[in-house]
Length: 257
Image 1 (spheres, rainbow, N blue to C red):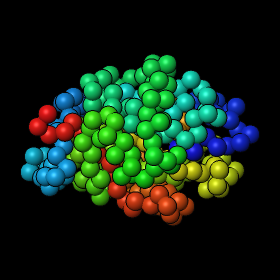
Image 2 (image 1 turned 90 degrees about the vertical axis):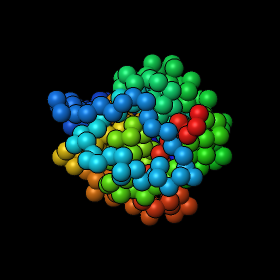
Image 3 (image 1 turned 180 degrees about the vertical axis):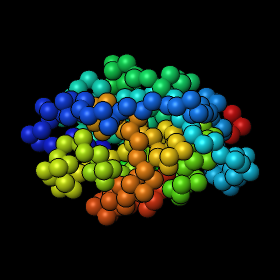
């Protein structure tokens, strides 16, 4: 997955397009944003309570924003060579957060590129299913993983437990007009493609906050729940071999460690 930059003649323009409008990455948390404790709650996939921790989180915080560090999937600007590395970039962001980087800032490009390149050989295929991404995280990065239904409550609960979410989508389905080809080649193959990103928070206006590695400066894009579900459905319809349904991938430290 992650063929986000397969724009053919548009590769040279990607940095300009990504750096565009203020719609994009103007997230400014208000005073009521609740930063969750930086140590994520451990995940035990065999224990049902870990997947549905309602009793632990009532009431849910009105706002949650996890300080997950950010990189795009081509941190050195080599987009043509990094068309399929959204899984790696998403895993690299979450791995750094779970390992203790709670800066919420841009990862040094050389460091981010090295992390992406380290993960690539572990992938069993170029484009992965949600479960396969989780298996890479568990087998090679040491994190527990769980694939859960992408209900609004599930997403909010997991974020409130300090657990970033990895989600598979199709790029134009996100409704973000800054993606190349959005206005001129909407949903055309090669322009709207399979992709992974990280959900890092939610706010009291009903939006979820993304670390989207598929475009330059994809840090802090706000999206409604319905739009995000549309992007998941769009992926499933366009890429039936990658169809996992409306799910989220939760990564967290393993229990009893």
